[in-house]
Every structure is written in structure tokens, then in C-alpha cells.
Length: 147
Image (cartoon, rainbow, N blue to C red; front, side):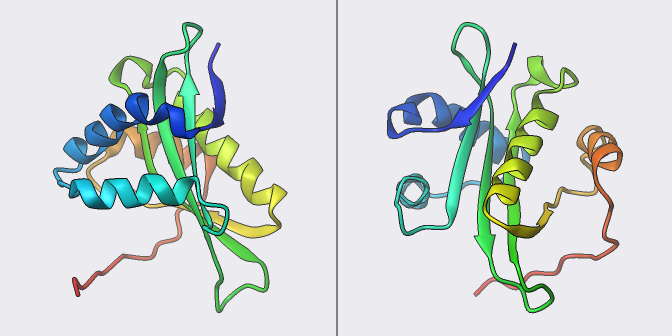
């Protein structure tokens, strides 16, 4: 049985390999100082960022997800952005990703959010099969400009 809970500062050593696995999956490298800042933000009371982990029966961290709350010009309520969902390969297809998403959805509801959304790369077919079952595809295409 998978247990989903907020990550605590003592979970960093277990979180970091999954965080690096996520980066590897998307072929990006996030500098260590940004990782340090991100980890600190997850645990700062004044930050709208949260990190959850999925733990197996042995207490091993098998999946992570991050959530960020922000305002929207389209909605009167908060919006929750689900970011960085990653599940170890041996857990994929077993419901761990769906459980992490549902925990973020619960957090969003608990905090009065009006919408939960996330993105994935168009080539991430396995994840998209799950997402197509549990959410509505918006049809929007993301553009970004590095500053």
C-alpha cells in the first residue's frame, strides 16, 4: 500500500534522487543552488509551494509531486499548479502517479482553489494515458521565453 504525505526537511536525501530522475527524464539540469532554494521553499511557511511523496510499505520514497498556488486573472479562487510529478519506473502503472495527483487535488480543495492544472511533454505517452483518464486536456500550447 502506498502512503502519500507531505515531505519534511528530513526527507531530502530520499527526495533528491527522484528529483534528479525527473530532471534526467526531461533532459534538463537544474543547478544545485536552485535545488537548495526549491527545497527550502517547500518548507517555508510563507511560500505557496508544497512537496508530497509516495512511500511504499517499507518506507521507501517511490514518487514525488510538487504543487504551487497562484492567483489567476480568469478565476476568483486560487489556482493550483501541479509540477514535477515523477514516479520510479517500478511503480508506473500501479496507481502511484494517480494517488499523487489526487493528493494534490485534495490539497487544492482544502485551500479553496478553483482549478488544478499540470503539463507534460507531448512525447510522454504513458503519462498522457493516465492524464486523459482523470482530467480534461485544455488544448492550450505552452510557449516560453528564457529571461
